[in-house]
Length: 349
Image (cartoon, rainbow, N blue to C red):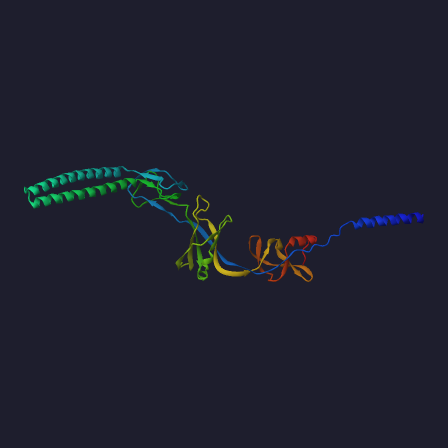
């Protein structure tokens, strides 16, 4: 039995060794690391700002009368030159008729005076009339021309008064308030409608007094809108006086002209004030381990990766700033969750 079993055992062992020799041996992968290096970047101070239209105002009545038609209401979009409301024009039309009649009479008197002047000039040459009579005719002709010019000005004024009965939109925009109703009698100077234009907008913010002298305006300003859009602004205007209550300085920055309603008045935004340069430490998001209240990274030490808590700042373009917990020159793992998986889902102390 032994003489037969030994050869079989040796044959099985050789087969097992041959099989194991064909299995590739996988070496442990070295985790990717990253050494912290300080980066020079712009220093920003963020304040709250608000969008407001550059062109906004209230249309007032320029003539007296009763409102017969009100074509718009609050929140309506209007085009430049659109008729907003109409006022009775009976009195104004009558005034225009009187002015035109006075102009016709003045022109007739001027024609008569000019003809008289021509006759007196011919008689003066013959010696039939005196120089005094000729001068009187000449003065009458000049007075007639003055009356015509005055009558023409009255016609222009009367036409303007008739035009005041149709209130037109000064620019394209949105009606924000209505101060009158149909049938109401208005007088010159009474507010009718309020509105604003959407084409030209600007952001308004208050700069603290302690930062007013630190602004590095040559860097430009950074604007963050509510939808995440970021704009770089260069043109600005800062008031030359501070608000007595808050001791802050008002800052206004115009936005690029827009076609539509992308930016709306009253929206809150974040405005970055440039305060020069600073040094910052940043890591990719993959190096940060965030779970519940834990925010940490794996730092390479002689004993291997060690978990260390950190304090984070702002994030941008896939990187986050490290405010506390790490120093320049230290090395961390680029993929924190890969290290957690390698430890069986447990965090290392």
